[in-house]
Image (cartoon, rainbow over all chains, first blue to last red; front, side, top):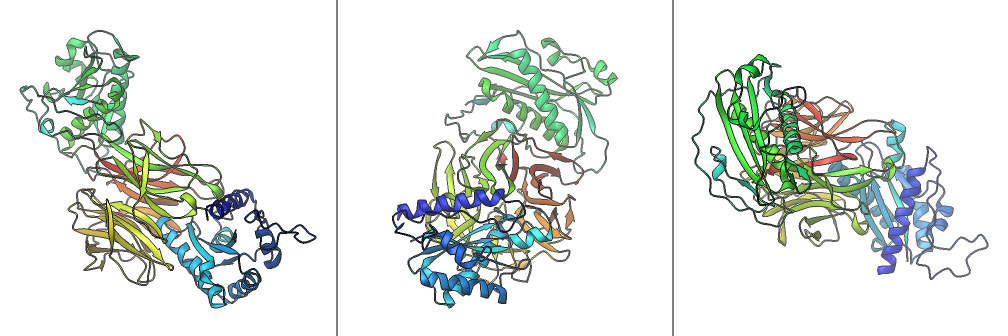
Length: 172
Length: 460
């Protein structure tokens, strides 16, 4: 349990750090954590560890790890549903993998409210994954409110990318 | 730390002196010496929108003999204390301090025998005199006097025996005495602020809990920045700070013990807890908790125990601030569609919306005087700081910028601090304050960027 937690933390922090360096390229990928470190196995020919963040992103696509929301909204629309369906297929192929759903808001809300809003968004995505058969006990939720924008800037374009729920692999 | 009043100074001299946070040594009340109190005219200028600010001359404090006390020279301190007094009074917006630079120094003998004609000739309506002497026991004795130059009368006389490291507090206490005497308002300079120091790139901000005096002096970082820290609140006795830490990638409210340097969870829960606030007596804490995506407000004893759930709507109910009598809570909710401000009794009963019109309203904070609620008004893509009465009347805006957020009140309910964020990729956050006229807007100096200020009460 301790190992799993710290691995998750390192993975999340690394991802955030890289996310911060991203210019405007939404296709910057978070680095792949090495899972729990003991399940390296033989792997595939590409060196991607099955069940890893890298494997997940290779499967769901560059922005397939996240769904986006309208201003102050948290409903899962048709496009979000398609994204989450792709995620759920991978999650069901990797039933031992646990994930964190990160909820985020753009900077046009006050701090505490945005944390509550990020909770709504992450839970909306979690509930949809659960409706597709993903065991909700595999999904942790955390809200960052407006603390961790993916796209820096005070434009509609940046805001649209920041109103998101991101699925992050934390290990097995 | 010892801060002792040893000269009689009106009603302020009789209060008991509880221990001060962060410094464990006890403050002992000292027998006070009865001195004849001055009788002078009392001006009433608070709340005026006039730009005619009273000119107050503040020469460097004199010293009987230049001595070195714990590495501090009494003559240098005399100038520094005068500078702090002048800065405090200037920041209040009500006064136009003159000096200590550019005006004559005074002799020790002049402290109680001012050259009134000279100060009148410089158009000063009031003059501050004082002295800094070695106490003989390793400390300092600071005296502080306020005079009316036209009447030639003494308006304030205060004295402090202090440890050398507390000279700033003596300056703030002196400024408070002057401010209170001239304005009729309660003091507020000798108080502290907890806030969040920010650094690093916008996408991965390092946010540290930090504390400082109300003017930015005596700055100290509390947390090291490894875990994201937000929304601190000083306990009324300054001994603790309640805040949210993302320690171990969870969102939880902690109570940090300033003297011990340790912290504990407010409540054990697998859910996110955030937006904490103290009750005025420090015995209760409000916090918000998200359960399956739905956020409600809870109240719990500061010592732990079973939390009481106060709200139960499907909307986001978040934040909260106690009325100074501890009987009511003002909070925000989007149950009507967007964020608006509501009040309720502390048991959660009688929930009533008080903000209407003009966009959304958030982050309500009840004034320590009880007469007003400060809040963030959101509309037209901007955040502004406003105030309204507890029933929602008389709403008016005090600031006008891109994003001004999260007001916190001065201990006397006359000044509001908040943080201002600028737009764009290079946007920064900084701490500001504005008085109730909206005219006196000042940026607070902080070593890094700053947000989420929390202003505590006047120190005893």
